[in-house]
Image (cartoon, rainbow, N blue to C red; front, side, top):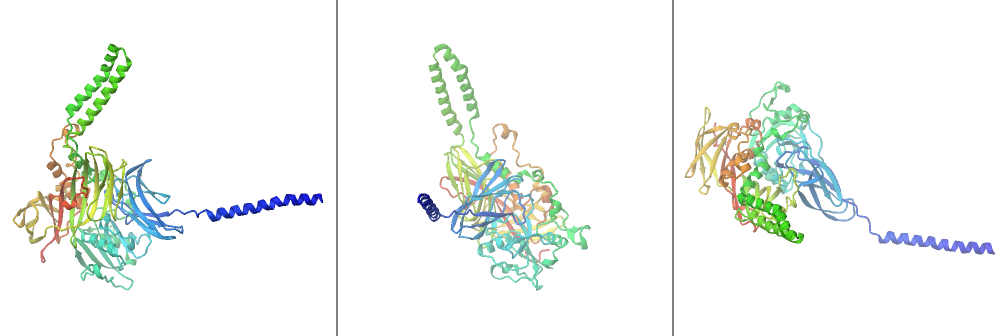
Length: 625
């Protein structure tokens, strides 16, 4: 019996222990919540054609997947990095996703330099996104009904029509679109496309599989041009007797010869079938262009955003009393040594020396702080320059650069009227403490120390109209214009400067009453802008090493030429030589005070001043040669 009793006594604890372990494991499984899976970020795509355009707000498209069974809401954060540190302020977008869902997210960072990388993070996921090689001209793409970004058609890149950005402010990097179907756009994307076309975009219509051109309805009816070439605002619509399968490299290059506001094409013997090509290398061949080195010295620094912002910063630089500050500095040094040394020799008590040293440091710290803060009237001020162009239906397109000078350090919220507002400080190497929310409910929140400034740029579409102007008389001559009369409305402002662009030449004009008349030619586009000289930006030696006595009005005038070049999308002398304004219209550009609607919407900034370059594209009268 002993062996049986021993066996029983041993098996009973083992059986009890096994059941106890099973119950504990079941309790853990039941009571422990399911581990939430992080949102996956994938397929980053830059721009419309996989490239970025410097000194512009660019498009970044990513795919988000929520593999969990829960609804998630998180902040998608895009941060530029340089080396091991962040650059600029992070761009933040609020994202909400249902369980097991997928969505496309688009962000609009400002590309300020060739080099750099980006990091996208959200919901415990991070993705490093390298910045691709930049190109200066706009993208030219075939809008595809597919939702996937696919390869090229011949030498033409394809872009999903459904991913067209919903803001015209995000289309600065797009130049031309090829279309062979009717996109199924919701209203914001449809309006953004039409605004982009109105500002000077180019649409090339292809024949569909049935051999017919797509028939557009609703707001897109403006694309149903009965002629081979139609216009909408400053944009053009071309019909071409080609289908998608006919888009060879030669055919695509032939299309680009009809991009508006470009120099007329010439016969290129290297192109098959005698097709025409542009005389200037327009970087159409991606394979060859990738072999060309990118260098910012190829472009004029005077038209870059950093140059414009630095010029604005000089307007709000405190006018310190440098003679007094230098005198206080030397007195402070002499009091520290040999002053404290002499006190120690005479008193022979280290406590007195320490008290004297601490007192000197304290008093002069207060003195330097008080004297250093004074000199600019101690006024919180914003100085701005902007480019404004009209859009249809009582809207304005705005590009603005601002510098905010504050006397009290704090976190400041910068907001502007309008939709599709995009912000950036255009920094290339320095971090900025703050955050940027673009698009819907836009805001730039930034920490500005006392008696310092913060530069930033923004793009917006806002309600408003410009005074009406109509070309009454126009007569070309052997060397340009011989006669021009523009009728303007009574509310046309008194412009400080006014210029007219017709084909390849700038003209000075004068206003008398409600008419603007031609005065004289002031040079071709390259001769007038002189983009290879940067003559407008390098400060005088007095401004670099001493007191710069230039007035604010003089500084504003120095920015007019760079703003004109920016409005024409020109960066180099070669760009200026290749532009020919459309023969059926002229551009009137005038400088006047900034509209109050362009002010920062923050009551702390009670003083805001600025100048605006207003651009009006005016159609010539019917029958004008």
